[in-house]
Length: 114
Image (tube, rainbow, N blue to C red):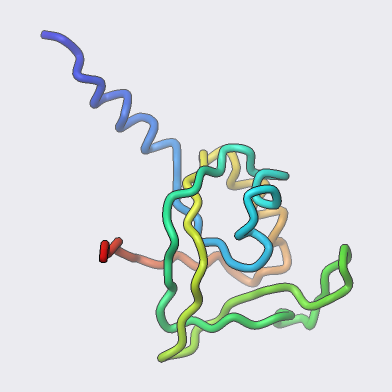
């Protein structure tokens, strides 16, 4: 029986994850600086969250000395961004980039095509 390639596809899927990006990580050039495997997946809306600048510690960027884009839960609001598909090998670089974040937020979601 000929291999249909499904096993290889499942293996590649298990090695990747989807990452919702906002702020400066919307830019391809920016996300690729530390996450070269990032590939555009789709435009997305995160319901019941709000975009803000700064964080719970009041930290500003050491690069541009301004507020850092962040999101927080806010019923009725929404944040638009993009979803990048990335290799799991990039998880550590994301964690380093967001060391100031209190916790990683995992959202269960579905894709709706209009």
